[in-house]
Image 1 (cartoon, rainbow, N blue to C red):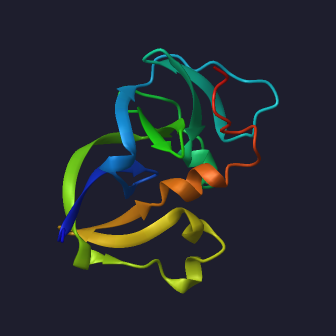
Image 2 (cartoon, rainbow, N blue to C red):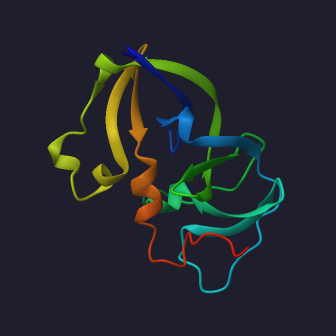
Length: 153
């Protein structure tokens, strides 16, 4: 049985987050985001990534943080869940770590109903507290079926 799991670490509004590497298809720099009419505020638009049109969710907006301009550190993390690929726009992402399973604690009960829905756990990595993202929850609760609907084939 595994004693640790691999994660991609990313920064968002000064906080460290982790996403299971098994959910990540790729990481890219932000090049061009095409706005989509009548999209939720957190959906910056769509990007063309490796032959596919992928919705691009601004996680700062999704989590209620102030919007920030893209810069050279801004990354698009393309994650997959239930046959859907969605890009998560984050402040920076460049670290790959194995987090011991016994270092991951469930989110505190006080977070339930707020950001707690998007977290599967909280871990300590070195001296940092890392919030572990629940990809399924982020993609399943994105403001309606059109927000992250799979692209038409």
